[in-house]
Image (cartoon, rainbow, N blue to C red; front, side, top):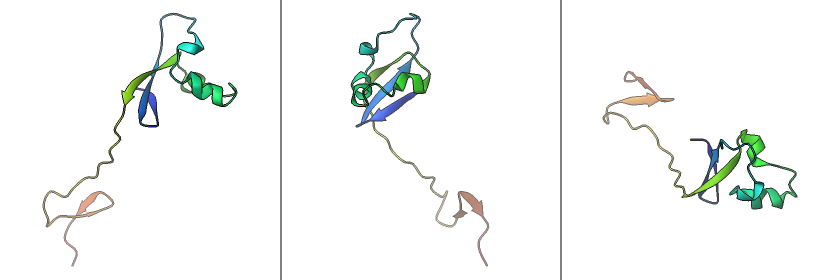
Length: 82
C-alpha cells in the first residue's frame, strides 16, 4: 500500500482506471487548498487521488534478544564480551 498518514488518518494513494479524476473527490483536496493549490499530493505520489481509509496506528517495533544471555550491538548478535 502506498499512502500518507496525516493526523492519524491513513490516506491511500489510488490509481483509477478513469483518466479524469476530479480533485474534489480526493481526500487530500482540503490540504491542497491550504497551500493555495501550489502543491498537489497526487502529483507527488504519482497517483490519481487519495482515499481516506480511516484511523491508522503507527507502532515502532524493536527486535528483542532471544534470551537474556545474548548480546546485540547495532542489531547484530555478537559473542560474549571478554
